[in-house]
Image (cartoon, rainbow, N blue to C red; front, top):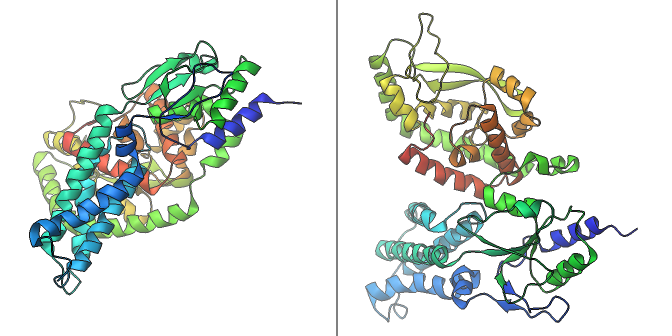
Length: 451
């Protein structure tokens, strides 16, 4: 028996992640489709080939041309060739990471161009210190050229690029609304007309999908127009995985990569060993300020639910007043029992620094879902289905929910937080961790989500 849902789901998987260019069709659904591409400047700014063909030579060659003249390649100074290779590799690494990061919701590449380029070129400079000779002025000239290229390029994309999707108004897709970053065009009949679109959004599980709509979607697929399932486009716009969209068989696909889990543990160890001596003066100053501010212990210890449901003791700097037994009161947003020093260390996350010890012990990672107190976690499990599934990865000092949502305490807020955690588990990767790390640095500087 013909099963339209299976056919459409196969079609959806075949085009998901396909062409990202904006396409347009002819004005009748039953006539020949014409494939048209988006505006030329969008193709230039968004296309990887443009960065390779124009950006790479410009960034590599402009600094030596300005500093050594047009004949630098004839009588190349010692170490210059090594420097040019280093600038080219640093440019490509930055391009690759930015390209991977921009797949995630709410990611404005121009915001992360400056810190990412700075980190990559600083690492390149540190590696070149071991070389016999290199041209430091050309290296930093390449750094300036890369900053200019990536910032202006991606800022231009954000300024002029607003994706537009055609929506098949059936099933859950009827409730889809526009966001600041994308527009919607609702289809009344199975045809696109002259509209310029980036893809079609449809609820493939809707029983209202008739043969006419199915033929329309098939022709769109054959002509290279992406067809997106409503839950996929919803996840890409919100950064959350709605629990009602989860099928029983889909939970198995949420298992994180064992290879990256192992690599991530190694990165956590190296990062903690490197940061502990660097942050030791700040931690000592924080401990001194806590002791001067109010009586009680410097550290606050609490049992939290950890990886695969194994409880562990988390270390934090105390930020609240203590009772006579030295027990900290229950925390809350704008709680008057937070000490003056506690308000500062909470805002800038300094109270989390002792958790570097938890990272060394293997209880936590730098990035992952925040661990909840054991008793609170058991309470959430009674009201929120699948809450314990977030423990399939190690808990983190910072996470996707923290940088997107901020502090959450109520059950309704925790249900939304769980949707963010499921998104993190589903897209568990180095690139998402790098994005969360950069957003965490922004959070620390702005104090967003302080509690």
